[in-house]
Length: 97
Image (cartoon, rainbow, N blue to C red):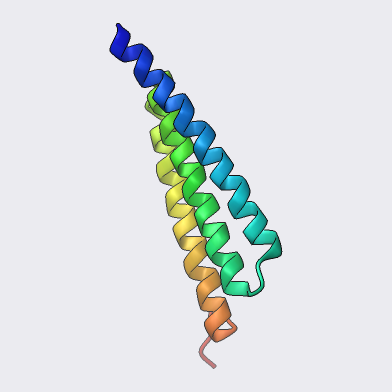
């Protein structure tokens, strides 16, 4: 029983730490000197949100939050790829004419 209480304490501390890291990444997303800095910050924010969802799933014991975190990770990956392609090539979808 004591191990379960200490696990919840560690999970709570990890949620607080990841939330603070999310605030720091939000600052970099707003004040980033270049566009790639902002993209990396937004990708880090998405990763931190996935981490918070997984930690919340561990805390509550609900598997639904793991599925939500997987969907968020897929969406974050696709959006990062789309923004990176837009920055490098200027177009996301190229049509053949």
